[in-house]
Length: 140
Image: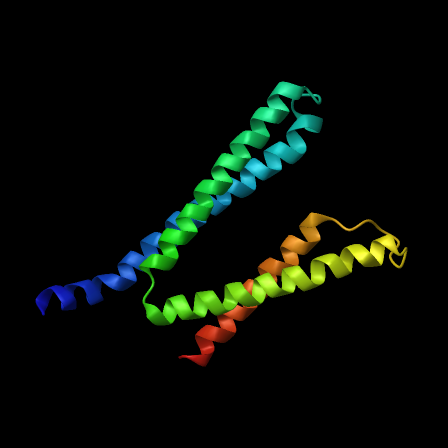
């Protein structure tokens, strides 16, 4: 009984620590993405070896970030996992539906600009934040 009480009191601290780790890995991934995207042009003058190295580092950090997300979700209580799963499923659906439609608009020459993956990533990020917020408010 005391162990259960101690674990429940430790829950907010555990989640805060997990959130901080996730933030650090996400920020590192964003930084390595920027390095891989802009490094060839501004730092190493389109040299092949540094570009390949930057992309491989970005992939490695990205996979490590995915593992941290998994750990974070496993540390959540059942309600937190439910909210996260709902937000993630809505985000996946939005990405799967809007991504091809966005590309079709460009291929049919209905847009004056080329679609960029960053646009889809931004849409999915905003969708996840909004769905997570709505889910949290729903169960408050």
